[in-house]
Length: 316
Ligand SMILES: NCc1[nH]cc(CCC(=O)O)c1CC(=O)O
Image (cartoon, rainbow, N blue to C red; front, side, top):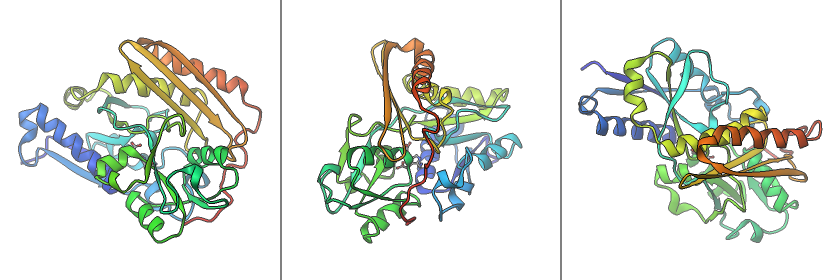
């Protein structure tokens, strides 16, 4: 049969797992989408997948993991795009919108090291592999003696490089590990007090064409309201700070009943200076809380706070 919906995604194992989860949820909600071939998955290689010899912050630019897929949405070759919201810039192309968030996975980071049960126990001067400026900065805040290597590649590639001894430790999102069935490989989990997560970490967002009523009726039915509110607050911080993968920003919104709490952090890439704030309010004010927290942080940042963003260490 001809596909009723075409899903655009990156081809990494994690991205594919997320696209398959979306396809399965669509099939469970709509009988016509459960027929063989009704929902097709189309994979794209993005610039972020191609650049492996540099950190993404060094490569610069926003939307390195989304641009090719958004182009396919705009030209009609796919109907929906499934993204890790952590990788989606706050400004979307004209004509497209994120209209659905799947239930959020674990927002925390996991710790991996054959040498130490935790960050605190790592030997002095050890090499931590991460391409994330946020993780780099928070690691250096807690352990200024450590060195950072830019560890690139998909989740499996990074774990292989750790096993080969190219780095002494690394950090990965629990969400990706859970989705890939790799969580047993982790040495431990970092609490959000120890390592505030990236904005929207663990959340999958679905992007569609504005006005594509047929697709949007299907996709919107999958929305998780709680995830949407949490991501809205966190992305409010990011948008206000004009953040991208070039800026170490962390934020976490939690919901308890109608109450929302929000924590946000901006930190210099070397971890030696940071600003943190928090908000508590009603979840209905998620966006306003995020913007307000972002404004406060922005007003406190000295000029050139984000200068010197690239790790000095090797790229592995
Ligand atoms: N930037 C890569 C990326 N984008 C989303 C995830 C994990 C899944 C998620 O946060 O939703 C990862 C890998 C990682 O940080 O370990």
